Length: 142
Ligand SMILES: [Zn+2]
Image 1 (spheres, rainbow, N blue to C red):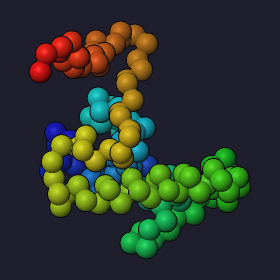
Image 2 (tube, protein in one colour):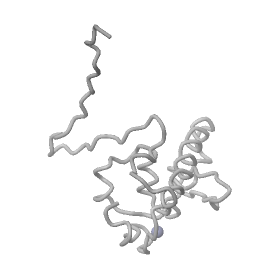
Image 3 (tube, rainbow, N blue to C red):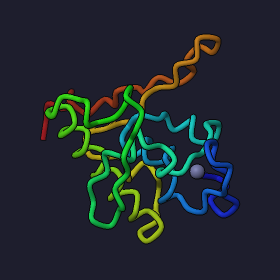
């Protein structure tokens, strides 16, 4: 995110990942699967280079991808699972396409109801725990 203009190379094909809209990492972030802290440290990949996730994008603007890996091929998965995954991934993808046009904080692009997962690094204790904000519930007089 800090280096939007510079971009990164894809961990699978080695080519440049030109924009955030092509980034599988950011796609998974919007889906709430990647902690914010990991965006800078995780490898970039083209969405197309990750058929295991790209196969779930069912948007007419996206040329569909087939995953030939029997471990992740959605054609071998239960249809309910595939359906809900398609809804999620497609919604996230569609949202990701808006980022360059709308701008703003990336957190705003998380799908509604999702929060980024906490980083799970065993060697590093969690420094920040989100604190519940206390409202002025102790107000008695108007
Ligand atoms: Zn690639």
